[in-house]
Length: 330
Image (cartoon, rainbow, N blue to C red; front, side):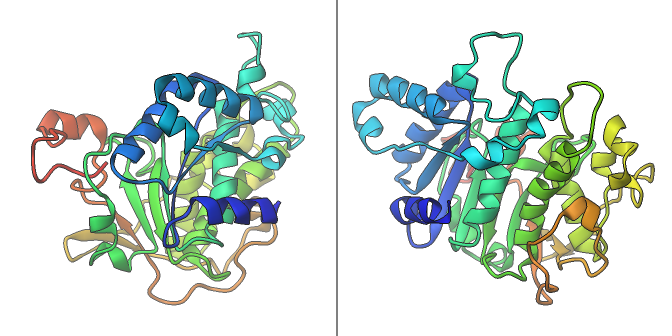
């Protein structure tokens, strides 16, 4: 509940800042590497998030063997309620599926279920923290990202986003972003994050004749960004999924070309102007969440390569060399 989340934020945050990353049983080595890398950089304000108690216990057992000191200071968290929605019986690995408890490889937990959980938790965290750094576990931390995030021009952004790989179907990656000052009910940045969870909830309520997976979180995020940057709620990227495209969720957006995000360039950075859409689609968005239009001037920034480079392109250019003084942060 909210009390438990508030207690976790109080325990793990530092000066209103928090880092969150998620993992399942198969990604325990990556989660341990993430925790050790953050500790080595001097960051203790991180929150590992798994799909259940058993996965947390398995991670901490392995961490104890790798680094006893890190084990003593690294808790683990899980969120039972979003992982237990009934729709996961048809659209995921099953309601309450915990990857560390799966004994049959023929019936694995769906990673899409964990991706939904991390966005549902992130949306709640944004109400309680001043800044949230949201990470996949396959990151490499080479220097302090806050030196850029907290300095102009990025300090003026409510959301700092990572571009997806060149040629990808979606322009923005869903596995790495930073949000700040997004706690107000009218925050468009918080609305965007909430929408990833709410649109997934809308999908898994759809009846389906056979077990399948929902559109991944990246499709939901890019639809939410397109909606907030244009002021009209739209569903397009998620509607490339055949079952979703045939549903009422895509009546206003399915089949249309995927919208280009209206980037503006200023101070050497690409920006999106964000507001909570005034033309709403309640069947897609769900109820609740931000209801008032966001203040004018709220913006999202596309992170420059010096901050969040895409891995292969950065590696190929040599930008990931830790010996370089201008090495990117993540």
